Length: 116
Image (tube, rainbow, N blue to C red):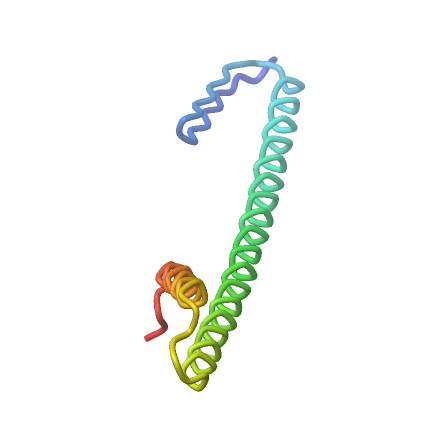
């Protein structure tokens, strides 16, 4: 006598329904479900690793940008001190270059919110 069975698996958007009467079919279905589960778990682990790698890269880039902004800010401060100590009027192209660097530095600094 052949046993009849009904299997229903619902994992939105997947809905698997199997009706049968042969145990070997059930074994194949269970093997397929197990294989699918392993694939899903592996995919989740891979996605998690990729997301963590991207976050690490973003953190590294942020730290590098913050360091560069600090260096540029100090350079501008140093140049302004040299200009002020020079007595007299600095060349207009030097003043324009300093202003350009200050503007670029501020734009970079504005990309990253200040820590509370």
